[in-house]
Length: 201
Image (cartoon, rainbow, N blue to C red; front, side, top):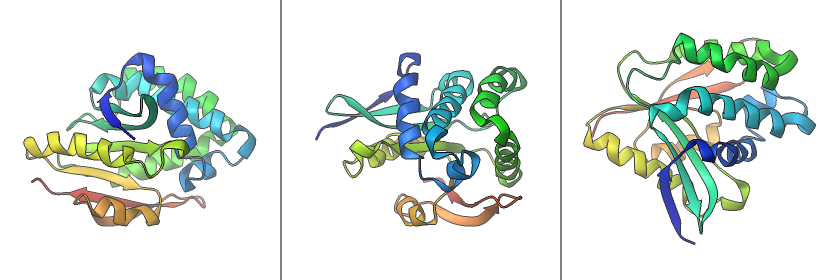
């Protein structure tokens, strides 16, 4: 299977959101924010489409992995000092996020607050989201996406940061040089995330 990584465009938003909705269907964060299995995929897709459309895509760090020409993975990176959406972007995101979260908007806010409070202050590349669709698992799409951006980050001798929402994924990120720096506990009965940092190369 041939894996190709390329920059994402606005025309990729539907495919990108669908990949993330599939990839995060059983994720602890998204099962907590969207407990109804019947609507979870739809709500998760709307959540990611909103984030990508109004914030991440414009930052130039969103990439798509195509496997034999079919979109099978995606990653959204924010460059140094641009991970937090400016007020204008936050206002544009609000309607879509409210529609996605519905009556669980408080859970979404709890996740956002916990993640923001733990975010490092040192400038770094931030891996906001990475995922592969079920049809593409194990085909190398995630690895190709990570290597694509990490090669650029290394050329800049910059650090990188992410949060893993599954402890089982920690060893995977460790293979790429990330190390756990702490745990992020979402209040109100929410899940735990693992903060991971990668020193400059």
